[in-house]
Length: 151
Image (cartoon, rainbow, N blue to C red; front, top):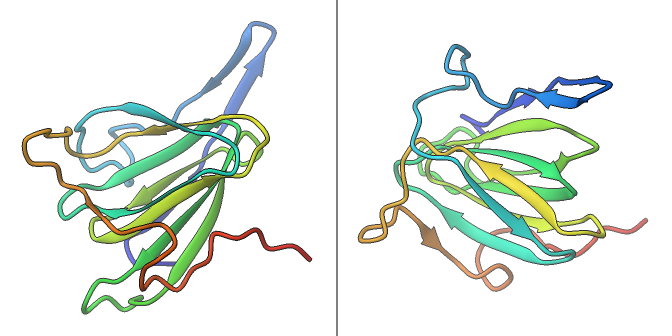
């Protein structure tokens, strides 16, 4: 796994009223600090990629539908430089994925309905000076294809 990436299996607690699932707590190893919480969605088959942050750590949790989240380590000096990690997050695999700074990331909705992703970044979004750097999803130097892998 890419250095600095963490995966936490989430526990869903159901009862006759519904379900509860803790996502991130301030008293666990994965927590660094709080910036904000936001929701982003993806329509079926849509790719939202690639970007990275210079100072921000992201924490992704897909709470509805399924997404393929892909990470690429382009960090100079990283022992995992050049490594690609692929994760499936969502209703069928409730996990929290920690994405460190300078690691490219993106996602593709693989469910047949809109997927909902909650992100808990360590920094608030700053409109005047966003910590977000992008490359196109398909035409870039990242060794990854968003095509479905049949077989």
